[in-house]
Image (cartoon, rainbow, N blue to C red; front, side, top):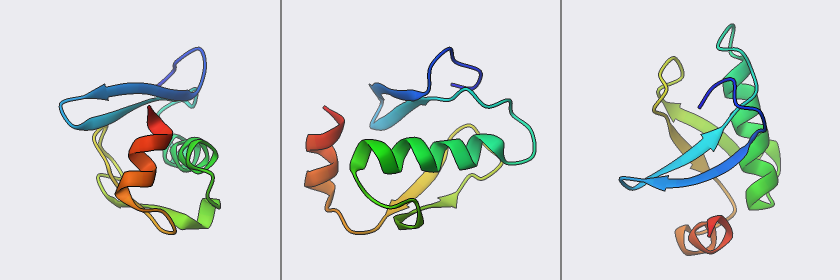
Length: 77
């Protein structure tokens, strides 16, 4: 959700994690903010989070190294 009042996790919808972002949708700013928000929420370094698909789309696929899917599920609840 670009241009949100506050950046952060916003729940899930249809097996996708919703993330609110403050950044204007120009020049990769939302992608950088997405990586920052996810790394903070999951307790991993920014370098452990990468966008693997959808860099120019609202719907993205993200790879997070150093945590399991179960650990991620626990942290986003």
